[in-house]
Image (cartoon, rainbow, N blue to C red; front, side):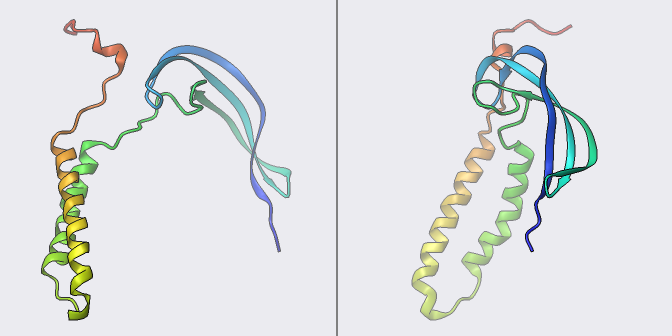
Length: 140
């Protein structure tokens, strides 16, 4: 049996407009705030009201201009720590003699990937909005 269910947005309208820097498309845009009333539906029949929802939309890329688009440094460090035992298992784990040729390829690929991850983590560049780059005044 096929069941159609989901969320439907009723009365979607633009409620606000603001000039912001979009972190996704890296441009200064007039973002729009959209408000809608959401309902859960079953077979396209609205059943449960879920309330109102407000979202900011970038007109250039269609994404939320305030959302984080880069991986944080803490997550990269955690991945480096968790990847080290995995890398050690690849290098020092015992494998079948007939898999020796393919294991060298796996070792090389994962080692290069881990070294790239280390480089990106160590030389992490924090995200700076273009609005804030020109402001060199100390905050009081």
